[in-house]
Image 1 (cartoon, rainbow, N blue to C red):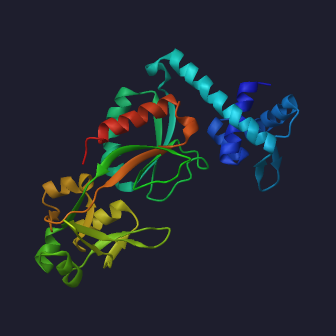
Image 2: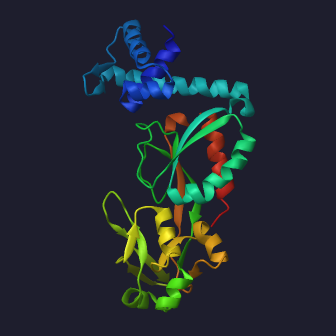
Image 3: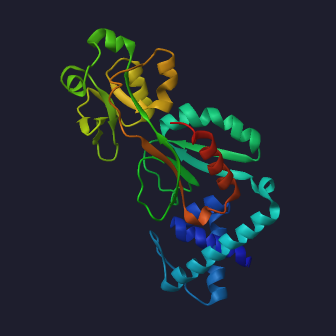
Length: 298
């Protein structure tokens, strides 16, 4: 039995809760992963997990062994990485998930530079605004906007994303330019964002000094950032979007900023990943590159 491989297999099975997902992430047949766990239990003389047709549950011995094995595997990876050196260790495959607008408008165009610097790293990019089960879906890291309270994940801030309130010239020619948040609420069409999980609308927010005004009643709304951008470009109403996403359209005259004497608080953009993967060389260089590349944007 390859004891180190068996330990890695056990750690990944516990994290994913599935032999199938663990085998996919390790690049091994499911039968091999199952045999490695069985051999490990025989070697230790302990029952590490309870198996049923539907659920895998670690025993108390299994949980204790997982804590030690997880730490040992991470330490071994760190030693190996230190001996190989930065450039030699930065290779392999990454599974990344990012919001649609950020992925399509900013990340994908910049990946050419990343590939130039790290040609031995391949990336599978999931694009969606939905919440992702990082461990269960085999994702190395996710990029998300907003505040996070999941203490089981490591979070690194990339940048504070600023907003701009804007509309297409065609809309302004048709309906006029709003002069205040109250005017916008009473006399204008609005386009905005809703959360797919709850169906709840994210309000337009306007602040000036101590005054705060929120508008959440939309004529058109979407649960995807690119959809919101397209709604604004189509002239369906006034809305708010990340300045970094729409600044090119503003510069080209396809979108026009309005209510510029009002502001909306910025939203932090983070990259999140499981704590046991912080020594992953390809993940480390990718995260460092993302922060360096987009951290200067406002």
